[in-house]
Image (cartoon, rainbow, N blue to C red):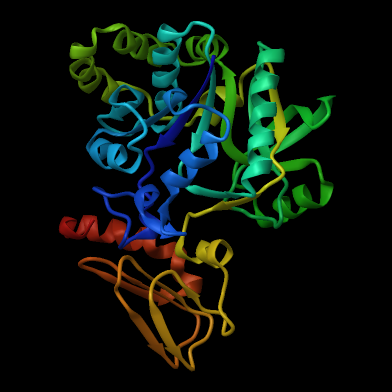
Length: 354
């Protein structure tokens, strides 16, 4: 049976002051009036029934996720007591799905991207499931043709073609230098690593046992526990797991990796400046993600939730984000430093704003 897991554990500190510990970026309704998590779920609904879609998120966010996705039963929602990176979140879900369905084919999807058009997404993901079923020894990932030499993303080198649009993976490369990224794009042999995967749970768990046996054993113990005891055991064992990504722990080491091309516009909403590509600009180059009025203002990004009005006069290339109890103002070129600002708030004990 085919299943899908949405990973929704990211903090999204670069989208402060709207993204907070109690309400991370995947729950912000800043794209088409919907949250990124809702958009991720709706993309999958064209492929799978709701009962086969699962979410793993922070335990503190479970009530918000349940409200955002009322179609899902409580049994399809899993809460992490703390973040231990992607390999453990995926491993937890692989164990749970495998116990319920030993023949499960598991797709892993992100909750913080805008991907369009949806019909192309559906076709590529369906091909990914078919690939995992056809090549049961393979871990399958999805690659996006790069549109720029982005240095903040990972890359996948495609090697031999095993079927139309399906390639062996030559290597994974994390966040290259600008010079190297330009070479990757010019070669036509590299994809952006989408962070989405499909595999048989047996295949993934075999690799987890080989490369991260402590996580495999502890996650297996949690999955095997009675439902009423699972939360307590998870609180005890989960914080002791090695914190590492699935790319470093498994994908770079596995003997058989395949990549399926994802011929879509893939927009990572990792900072406020990403909204320029997601939402588009007005005639003066402004992006308005909320009610706004501008006068002689150019190239700005103006964001709030709800009915809050932002007015800008005579300013250029600014990011202005109005949160419930904090407002961010910075130049667009400095938007990546929001993460440093948030770290400073925590260091100074201003946790009421986090």
